[in-house]
Length: 279
Image (tube, rainbow, N blue to C red; front, side, top):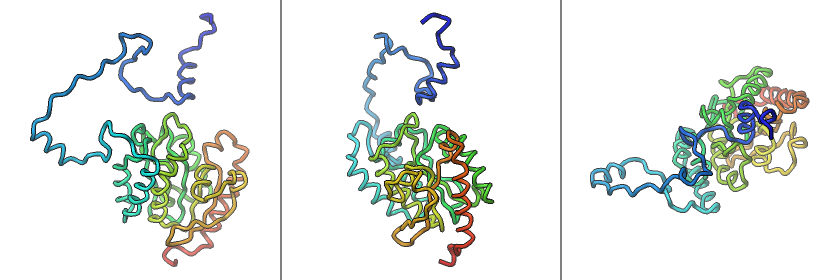
């Protein structure tokens, strides 16, 4: 490669962003190819005084201790189900998820992205997982796709104060990679409980992963979008419909027309369905 053909700094940064490298692990760069740059093992720390140990014992401790083997996927799924079932309110569910360590995504994400909007809303929107902007701010749909979602809602006379927004996965996967089936199954009880506690009149799933997970279908989004189905919380049956994810619409704007049809169907259903107080 000649100096003239070498990529510019801007091109390198764009490549790193596309590859998912969007945050720094250290304040200073480290050359991993040099032996003398390899970090030496940390020296053993002196044993703590009894008073210090007592203070740590009183502080909220993580469920999984550092160095301990992570729970098996089956155990993590069972733990998530049992924990979610005990949450009587959204606030309790959020606090419980903050402490849950059965999903490895919690250790790589910046923070929990729980939800945004009105917990009393009649319409609940569910996406797949947080992205970089959501991981930074701790709110779902705040990046480019979030701005488009706001415009989509405004087109049918709604905004975030009138809807409730969440994701199937509450922690950002590293580099915005696709969540694994195991990660989805571990997090599924939490979003199911969240839907049950919000108790909306309509659930709108955004994109293929959220639609297939929540509506238990193997159809792709092209086939499942715009089609009404029932979502059973265990205590109530809720009307559900799927549409394209805003991030997909940014890449494929030709499908905005279909999304507008889906949103119009949602608006008409909200007008026709009785409110939650009447159910």
